[in-house]
Image (cartoon, rainbow, N blue to C red; front, side):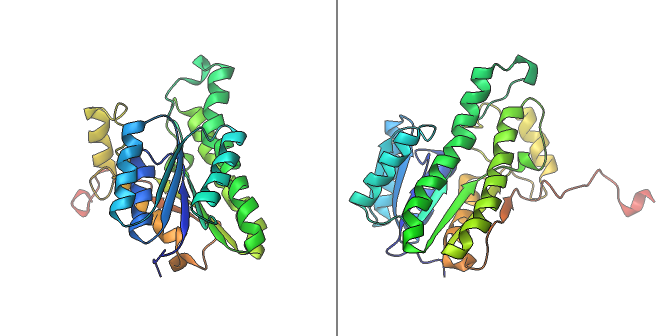
Length: 260
């Protein structure tokens, strides 16, 4: 049920982090994988190697999902070189930590350009190609910050909340046409995007709050994406799968029966 042999998958932002791990997981399951990513030759080469080690074809293209033209040209190239797109994973994003009143209009719009509008571009490009064939799966990478807010991340959280709404609206609209659309919401995950933000103090706080006692790895999220991209989730639409080690449900504050 998790077999993707013969499928063609897109993973945006796959030159590092969750995107790279997802590309590797989909390739290991049998899919050829393409990605549009910001300039990162070394990361792109690493992703290509991981895909090819799985015996699959790789296509890494520099561009930005904030540009509709870049995304459409990329999608056309994928179908010309690999074949019809079966799976599209919107993952490319930026992290911004900045107090709300210090944010400029330019900063706000730039962050939403990649983290929300980029997902709109990706979903549209995928649906334009999937709908005529009556089949396909789209997975949007959201965030638990849309459930559990953090200060100084208003633009990022607004974008991720928008991704959830977009996922649910499109899931209902396109399910009758054979397209399944879902989201994966990572919790604290160690990537190049978060490495500087996760100071020793932040790490200690996360490890205390996460029920499993550890910060997530990109592969933890990639396995969830694989589930939603595969036939194993054939009856799942409009769902946001939280992958956070139990952080958002952990209400422990130190109480026990001995305290009563």
